Image 1: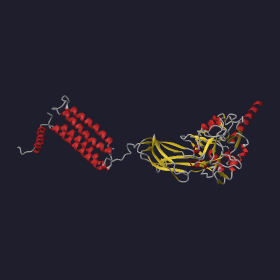
Image 2: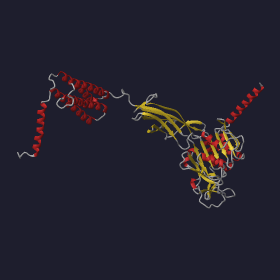
Image 3: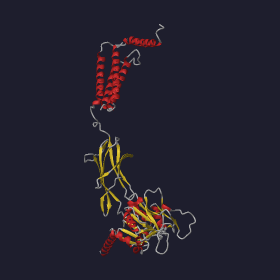
Length: 432
Length: 120
């Protein structure tokens, strides 16, 4: 009896701890616990957004992402570099599976990134430079108070990434760390921050004897990836980019003689984190409806040349609630193997996108397809089957005036046939 | 004579052909003549419909096809009946005329059934 009670208590305790683990929904893996204080502004901002941060050391033996089949966290922030391998059950493979399950990962590293981390970033299509190399820019660097360190370079927020960053960031974003290359044919990786045209990727302090493998705008400093299942991964080559020191860096002097008030790091880092943790650019589609024009019924199948009203609600997650999405480039396709129609959807400022289309003069099994993929927004894919049938035999027009001569000729032929048969049967003179 | 050019000679030849044809045609039994008359009538109706279609446009195309093919079909069946009955130039010497007519009626019924289905 007593043994059973202990067992019950144990089970209860286990459930309670599991629930607690689930509540702190952001796992923060830190290489060094000092980062908690050196990056306090960044983490403070996340807590302000309502996230519960669960700080763990990268080599924590009890580090685990999942408990059997249930994930303990929805989001992971990982600031690590030289750590040879993560403690506990978390490793590159586990983190990739975490992303595969549709969860989000913000990863920052630096020049000493370990093989484990390289495997992880390669898994999402970002190839870090070899260990020890850093992004150096001898023409455009930030001057520190005393020493001149050409490894603090200013990155340029890519224009294409303004949806990720919530708008263009004008101030230079300071960066100290490792560059990465992204395959040009990569569809899912978006370069958010790239180095200036005079930057190179090399080992600092060593003379450069051959041409650098990575240089100029090709050097990706931060890449944002949105996978096909809408999981978001951000890979940043610099942990310092998120630090209080870089946030407060002012005045920024980017040589030669160019002086900018404040670094753009704070805006960049917080916006980037908000995007990665699905606080912005998240779309939701609901209420897919298609009805015969003018009615409210969805027939089992449409008829060729029918008029169809299609509408769909799209909402955007903004500032903690679902707001109507506004865009003029949402398109709908009417597809049977290939699109027969591709029309723009008009919206009414309340999130309802609609259009009226006329079914083409072809019958078969069609689909309404809405495939909306824009950088920085979650992918929307809606596919609704809609078979199209031809006219029924009694749906054609009857007794068309233009066809009266044809009707008449048919009657005349029948009359002729009748007359001919009669004449033939009752004709007196026999055949020879 | 020699004053008559090759043109009038050609005309005369054509006239001769027609004359011979008319003379020979008189020998045709009257039952066959009736068949010929109906065949010509059917062809003329088909031609009229074709002209009408070219003028008005092919909108109820199924109706046009039905009307036109009714005429053509009727013409073809009538010609077939004629072939079976004309004992002078026929391969159907053993076929009774009653049997030929029965075939003809059956085929026409099938033809008009199809035509009414198609006329819309």
